Image (cartoon, rainbow, N blue to C red; front, side, top):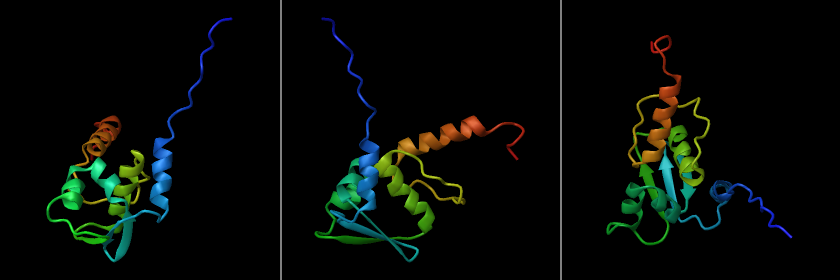
Length: 127
């Protein structure tokens, strides 16, 4: 009797974390951005961003649930950030514009954006 290959399905990790972002259970940090509130799990944010890690687990952190005000960022831009952090997938960003910068040190996100630009930018469409 020969060995048969076992087919392993693709990872569902990003789906599981994406669903985690959708529910309120266990969320222990909140952000106020342009009058909108966003809740998240501090451990997930800290695992993906050294800036969040320092802010949420550094010596200046507060115990209990925190509400952190984010200034100079539109809610639509901030909404994309937790989505990427939890799923490692870029959300639909058709409505994003402007000069929002990477204050959370999301290097993989920056590289993904650079890759998209590199593939789509041509002499004909640069203007």
